[in-house]
Image 1: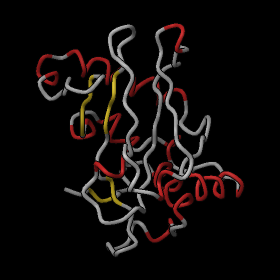
Image 2: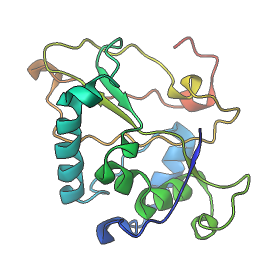
Image 3: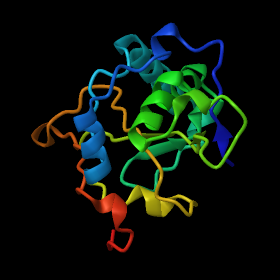
Length: 186
């Protein structure tokens, strides 16, 4: 089910406040359906989450939760098991950025739920294994979510440097304006 945003006391001080998102970035996100916000999350947070998820993905107990049917290994809702992921996924930082990009008022997110409340649906971890996993087919994430709205935001957060395609890496690509056309065939 849907999970509500909660300011938790264990949230690292480095995840409390987002840097200002330029109006140009907000406008591009609104028009194109995607934006790149570099250096948003502190390196020490990324390192901790990466370390925890790496251990998680190799632990036999949790490996059963992984799905290997797609052209990569994937895990869902790791925030339920890993405090570092919960800290990041429910952080005021990501909430502020989501509210800014979607034109929502951040200050009212900690009050009672309303139709304009921001909620965490899930976290997903996708592990692309070098020289093992294939190319992910074109798709629209919104078509895979059980919502009757397109007012959804997804954060793609790389946890390490992504090698070039020539070096066995797989970059992430976006099709401009695809967020506004659910009739696309992918």
